[in-house]
Length: 249
Image 1 (cartoon, rainbow, N blue to C red):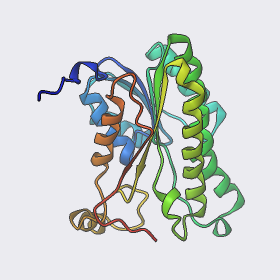
Image 2: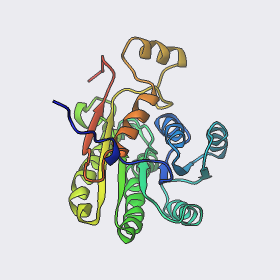
Image 3: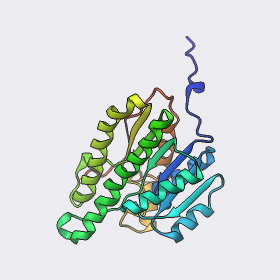
């Protein structure tokens, strides 16, 4: 029996207007390269100009960026003003910007609040601004990078897990609120990934990747492209991706 081809119904990323948050390091930077290679038109941002310049210098294509803080309302306003001017709208939001954290009782008050504003409030603010634009044009796709920390609840990750659990609940509820507007909502839940957030040396991270205890960020970037390229009527709600030997405690 020959199955019908679904290739033609997949979403082509060429020319898509994509806002990528946190595209200067880790998963975000790997995703920046993958999206650019797919022909998307991209605006990205990060907190530090030097990291932004380095990320943009290694990418070919229609890619722009600015140095702003996702934890601030002013920063998000600046991003979407630049988005409207440069791309004239938004087809997809890929939210990657995030910070690691210590247990809440080991952090200064302003520090744990800043992590929440970056990891959770910043996602909600970007989603709101994107939805207002997508609803006017008849659809779009929101993709949030969450974490399996919401499931494993490892000691030491109370603040970080709280932000990622918030994203998970937000996304799963939001999709029911915007589906009738033609807007899809997806969450990628990575496990242990070789990023700057890992508190170990580059050599230790390379050894962990080789041993199947950590994944390179490019694996997650490929998963993000898979989700974004499904057909307009297919919504990958949750996609969990982790190394073969994932630490769960």
